[in-house]
Length: 342
Image (cartoon, rainbow, N blue to C red; front, top):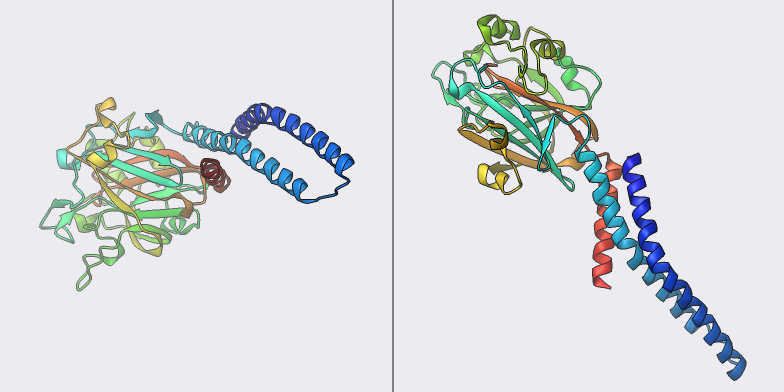
C-alpha cells in the first residue's frame, strides 16, 4: 500500500501542476475584471463569484480524475506482483505441480493452478487430467471421483485439523457440482450448489472415493516429490507441515453461502490471458471460474484443492487487494467517468 500511495501522489502532483498553473492565472484575471467592473458600475453581485467557484471545482475534478485512475491502477499493479505470488506471467499467478505424482494415471494428474484479479473480480483456472464431471468409478460414493473444493486460507495457521477450516478467515469454493460436497451423493440427496462459502465444516471422504486412507499412505505408495510436490507447497515436508500427514478434508460438509461463482471454459480463460502452455503445463482439462473479491477479507492467502480420492492436489500462494485498494480503484473509475462526461 505504501508503494501504491507514493505512486498515486506523484501522479496527482504531476497532473495538478499542469492544471493548476493556468487555473491560478484564470483566477487572477477574473478578480481583476470583477474589481474593475465593480468600480466602474458600482455593482455588487454574488452570481459571477458563484460561477467562478463552479468553474474552479470543475477544473479541479478534471485535473484529479486521471491522477486517481493512475493511482488506482498502480495500487492494483503493486498488489498483483506481490512477493507472495509464485510465478506471475501475463498478470496470472501460477503454481505448477509435478507432472508425475498423480496416482492412478493421466486422469488423476493435476498440472497447474492459476489466479488473477481484474478490478474487483477474481479468477481461478485449473489444468489437469480430471474433468469437472469427475472420473467414472462404480465403487465411488457418487459413481464418480471428482475434484474436491478449493480452499482459501487467509489466517495465520495451517489446515491440519477440521476445526481450523471453521476460522472466519478460511473460505471454500465449490466449483465442481459432481463432487460429494454439501451432502451430495448421500441417499436421497442431490446438491449441486456452487459458490463461495464461509463458516465451514469439512469432511474426509477419501475411502468412499476409492482413495488413500491418509496423506502419509499416498506418500508411502511412492508419490512424494522433493520439489513440485504440490505446486507452491514445493516439498513433501512443506505439504505435511501444512496439512499434517493424516486425514485430508477435500470436501465441504456445510457452510454459509457468501456469493455465487461463474464457471469459465478454456477459451474464456485464454481470452483473459491464461497461458499454461508457457510452463508446459497444458492438461487435457482446463477450466475455471470467476467470483467477487469483495466477499473476501483481503491480504495474503494459501489456496489449495485435492481430488476427492487425494490421488493428487495443488496449492498456490496469492494475494487479494485490501478493501481500501478496491475502493481506490472504484474512485478512480468514477473520477474518469466524471471527466469523460464533462
